[in-house]
Image 1 (cartoon, rainbow, N blue to C red):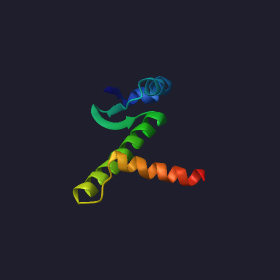
Image 2 (cartoon, rainbow, N blue to C red):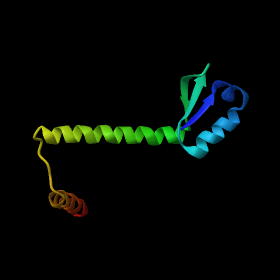
Image 3 (cartoon, rainbow, N blue to C red):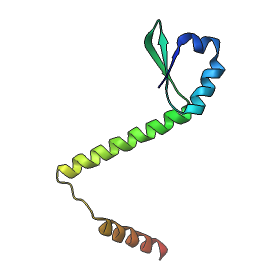
Image 4 (cartoon, helix red, strand yellow):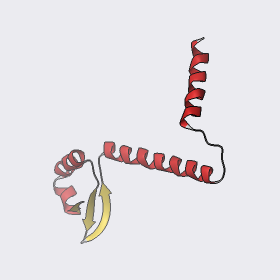
Length: 90
């Protein structure tokens, strides 16, 4: 975990930016010794956002499964996909 004082942004933005890009993890910014902000590169943020969206979709699918929604085996899914591919190739 990276923790930097707010003065680091004011005095050396380029260093903080470079650190955020190199480490690809959040940098926690403190103000008067207390947590205040989190700074990270856009690339790292987008990766985290995609992981979050995937986890949400997986949680929804699991909830549907537990509620009795129809599920498919790997073999069934493969057969359905092969059928779709075969239809497109005709």
